[in-house]
Image (cartoon, rainbow, N blue to C red):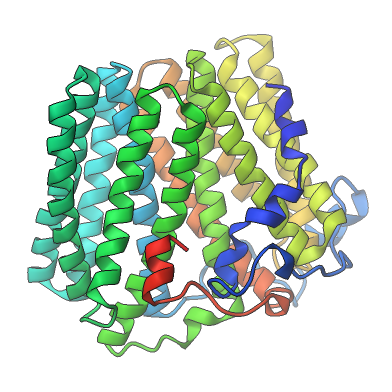
Length: 447
């Protein structure tokens, strides 16, 4: 996997496709709209001066814990929760299908638990936002949606083309039910046809990635997964805006630069967590989808580099990508090495070195609003989630591995809010304003 960093190094990919697009207006802004701001004030990683400047809080600085307590509005909180849960559903659904197709029944059972926990939390959220009748309707529609996907995976595994078509036909009905529930949630504030198109697109993403994985086209399967994950982030925005309008909740904060940045970081960092878990497990198993998982992880990394470039300029992006590449390579090496081996110990030490270096970089980027010591703790927690889940996976404690990956995924959303709050005060206002459109065509196209 030593090609990981060289692939990541093609930073232009991040500027072409970067999902900081959620910071931009839906179709009017593209790759050329990134704001190239100087990297002034951004501490270069690895310098003693940066460490000294940002590990001692001053009266003008807030700790990560203090920033995390900067409470978003109820509407923004709803959006964040929908982003987290709908995005997780894509990752878990894809994993469920892949475990089934690979004949990994124990892994399938563990991922099924994740799917069910995610579903229960979604039902609770919809019930809280729209009332018990809507929650019950959502529970029924969502369960049908999951059941049909399971039936499709079984038909794929058995080579049953008649069963596959029957499942596809059932999916049309299931996604129609889901669109009905979404319409209730937003009180008709979003055209029903647009919600139906979004639900259909989500269903097609899941079915098409299953087809690609079954055919051994792993690059395509992971590409579709990335598209599906991004699409769910946009759907979350649309649903949250509609629900806020229906409930007459203040929603001005939706388009605040730091909240738009929070959404963009959440998408990239949470997707990183999902992809790196898949990559580490593929590395451990020496699975045939390992190259596809690696390419998808690299693409996500390139987009993160593009985000840093938009915020702070190319020199900062280069420094960030060097550190992030070290992070990814160390995790893959850890998963690939036998337990208790010198290679695994070396990989763990590499991760221990990366966290404080990246923390110093981010502390400089936030002008000390996030002290390096707090950031290092958060990044170390991220590494611990990943290495601990890898340990559990290697020991065939698959339930524990899933629980740890879920914890790590949720942690990325908390970290994104903290980072965006700190960055937003100084930099995010320079970015183009506007977010995902609440209207139809853009929703249907997955933008």
